[in-house]
Length: 587
Image (tube, rainbow, N blue to C red; front, side, top):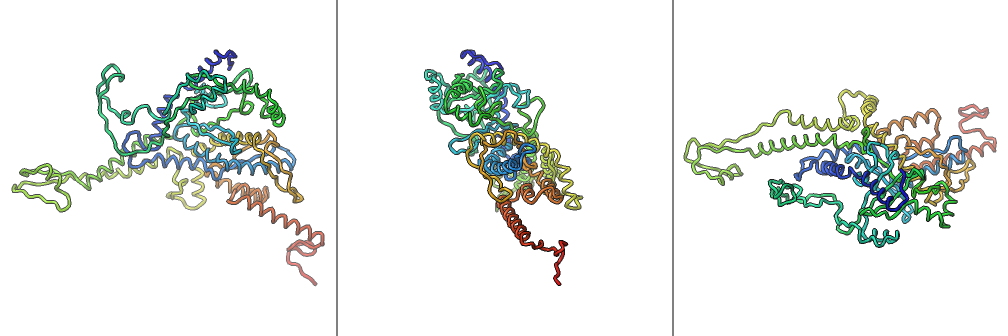
């Protein structure tokens, strides 16, 4: 995009970009609210359902797609690197996995998967906390984000995108003051409850029967079915002055990089990253920092990294020519409605069987109160007429209604590409462990495809976090010991080359690939393609670091013992003096 230099035209241009990117926000927000209602309550009305299958099922699907406690990255040095460099990368890999996990980044990604199954996609925003000296990750809901071209499915191919959020009023005033726009404070648009509906809950459930005009702007009369039972809304209650903020990221064709504008409502551009970087480049502190870490600061207008933005799109199910993808919950909502209907029918029939309706005929003076009391414990009635009788209407349960309800659960499983074997349930015809494993591998193709699709955003999140550590983390990293047993010289993230390769180690993010990884590790160890330490790294057992440390200590002791025997001219244990293996004999 060609961004105007004139401040007035530039402000209009940026506002036009915001309007384009946030054009579908309201329509999408209505859909997201509906999906959230189904996930939390199993329906959209005020009446609670008997059982919400969607919530538990989506949690099950997410557990197959991703497991934060087993996920880890593999960091590889450039091909044909020296052994010293390879050892540095191995040490950096272990340190980075620990730092990534300690910062809660694996857990953030797991939360994003749940949200993407409910809504359709989730955006993660990477950053760095100078307070805690740790990488940060912010989960952005899809209605807080907008893209310039929704027919383009990749975020990196978008010409512009917008992140909308709210900041405190005093914070907005401070930013305007720092930008030299203090006279614009009076123009700020202030809101108090940006996360809640502007109408009371009862009004949203009103059935309108008449209006005082051609539209609902006049007097309205209708009926409301109130409920007095408290229900959790899971919405933050906000009652303080807030101002809407827009962080606009635009690809600048002149700079050939991303350019960021910060805009406060109503359309006041308070900061331009290009101008900010121009000012910073003239400062001595920035020049010294740039000299030390040139790759991270060689930019004209990008405040993050050259040709990089901090956003990661998490979208398990793609749709052709639609950026936001498909919400998996949409496939489950009709099944949930069907389940609600069947459970209500079963519940209603069981109630009528336990408390059947009655017909009283031929009685004289049998009032409604007496009829209502009749049928309770120790109740009786007497009448003079011989034809008086009371008949109970006992409804019969349809013979197939329970099997029909159970089949809904099978459709839930089929809609997500799962099988009974994957869930740990027995299946008829399974003859052995290998047979069950083969069925599990054959039936997991659909859900594995979705799990593999999550590797790309996880790797991007890891790559951005690694670069943030390279730029900001000054904690030393101790490499693996040298061949002579001495400790290596400490180094830093900043010493790492930019040609590294970061991957998800052995699809470790998903439990679906756990057995494949174990089999591959056993095969490689048996064929002597890897040693014991590499086997521990692939299997990633509990307390792996201490196991590796103990293995190295034993290998070191073994090497010292072998060197001592060779110095004294003694044979290896279990060998004869002639060098052949077997029990030694002495004449």
